[in-house]
Image (cartoon, rainbow, N blue to C red):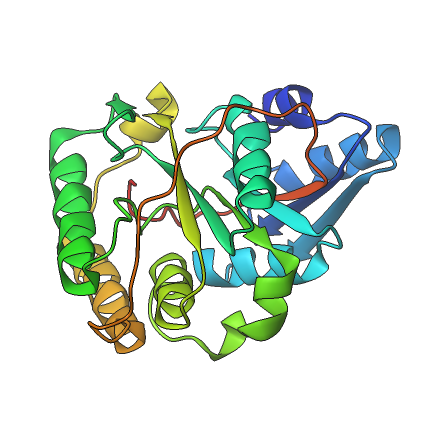
Length: 248
């Protein structure tokens, strides 16, 4: 998977940061081999598995671009989303641009029914309590403005980091936009997707802990138009982690 991910993503006009979150296979070695071939690849290895939140934060703080795009390592959201996210972020002066499979024009493929139902329920719940236009809160794939990250220190947020970042942005009146996205799980991820009761309880607890960042009801929000893809993307980070986030 590492070789195919690198081949699908890497190009000359951006920096690439791959976070190996304590993998026990050859992931780190393969990433280092790729970094030898591509000078704009940086590989960061966690000695021990620290989880998805830690992998995301490591990538965000290592990136130097003004626009930072985060992708899942298995490319459940294809590389074509990178330019769309970066373009929407810049053109709409947004803090966050979200790849949104739950947007009216978004689609979901090959996600196990139980996992999909849990994800849909979680995202509908957040949309209800925030009263905002955002349809997808739990997905990792999105673009961040460097200015936003400098104003809101993600390390101070609690709960599930992807939810918490959107809630923190909304609570500050920051602009959050969505790009319709296609979420398609590869067969390997589907085969490994069994979720134990203990794991489900842990993830549910993390998501609920994010609620402390829910914005006050009177904060005004309004929908924003979608933009087409742009051929440029200043910088993005990709996380290689054993922990999977909610399906969104």
